[in-house]
Image 1 (cartoon, rainbow, N blue to C red):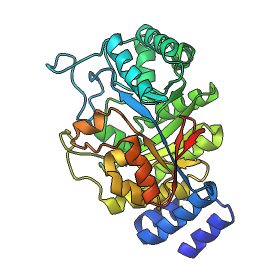
Image 2 (image 1 turned 180 degrees about the vertical axis):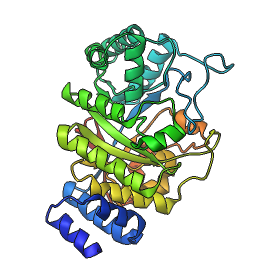
Image 3 (image 1 turned 180 degrees about the horizontal axis):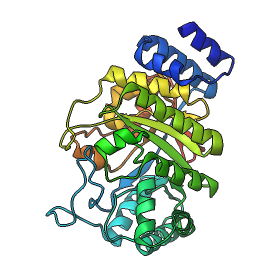
Length: 354
């Protein structure tokens, strides 16, 4: 079957779900990796591996969603619940700018009182103070929550956020885009169709977004494949996704618990993602959850991007995963794998080759 699938890839025919499931569950890892690597080389013949200098500012840890896989959230009355004041946020962004950063990732969960006015005020001030930084923030679940709190339609909410400075939307909260899994691991969060709805509206407004997948919790292999095909189908309609980022569930300190996916499973999922998502240019390797060495290996299994330098990261760290890398570390990692490191913008414009 591998030769049949290879033939489809070489002639530009998209794979079907049966092909993809076979690659994920039956094919040998190195065979799948080779197919993915060939696709990456065709899409990125310049041999670059990119990264963005960014910071993840979690403006609050108060979240009504209380997902079972999350170790970061707190209830509003918890002793260690917090909401950052604006001056603290501005100081964090100033540090990002001082380090040559161009992307601000801000996410904070579903806060019970923060409506559209709070975000509009924040984004306007950020845009005025730091015009060189792209506000790449919130998530579909946050957008829908803010709209509900503010008595707005989702479309009105997203338009107002964009007008105040939101430039692009990260793909957080996708987990697995199958409602059976979502009901099990995050029953208070939006269903997959609402996630897709926000993303397609963002694309319609001209905002680019990323797409993610958190695997290794309670999903089955066919549900991983369904997730990939749902992402591919949105991309066919809109073309708005810049990148896809698969990452593995980190169970420590979470209600859900369980075991982490193995490195072999991570590489298999990454490679199958590169093969299935032939209409998305960039596949990101997650050093934040996998560590530097596994991320380096992933560059030969279809990955062509290492995401951000992340001057700050709290959500994955709360689950006991605390890999850290400087910009110099990322450059050396890429060179060590035989590629050309390049700093990029949020929207994958190359700023500098190293």
